[in-house]
Image (cartoon, rainbow, N blue to C red; front, top):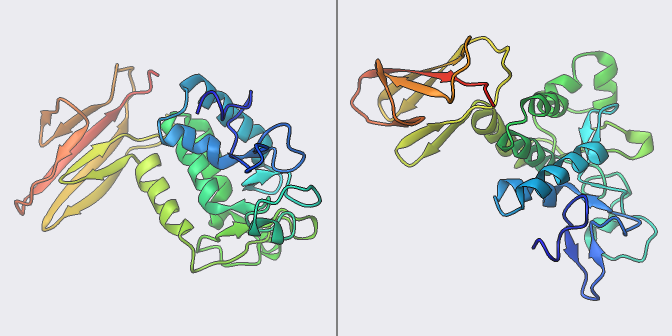
Length: 265
């Protein structure tokens, strides 16, 4: 992968049968695609230094702060001889063809969370949060969709920049839920355990999550520490744990957990 997929500042997306790369700086259209950058991090398969460079390239080239969206790829397919398939049938800037395809936008934020880049996670999460596209009548006039559900796509085509596409059917809502619960709040269910690994700003006030395991309630309080500690510290029912993992037991009792969050790194 490192030999054949690295393009110099980001990872290429694919190759055509004739050997021409896709998602390369040498491409006139689709010179960068977000998915290869995000999944070089999420998969753990990318070279860490290259993945960090690739993510910064995606941030600089695909995050459109003025319109509040994260493009899937750029520039869109239009007039070049490349034939990537049905994606080229969309108008440039619509859906997968250079618009925000929200699955991929969420994966980019998840990747920044895995890199523990708290600032970018919060910035980008707020950017793609549909609620923030409906705060005023003027924003709704642009977005033109329900701000209380996740849209599968947002247009970047000139006359419809910022307009939401399909809503209600989208799997992007499931990924948004995972982004918030797992990548940001840091609650990962793994069989009969909860692994806690949040990515939240240092200025967040303490918050508590109630987690129900069958008939048992776990009160999990997250606290930013006022002093530097080497790593996160988990206390369950008054006892400090050797790791940030809560062993779930359905004993019908209420359990009280607190994660003290380190910001030393």
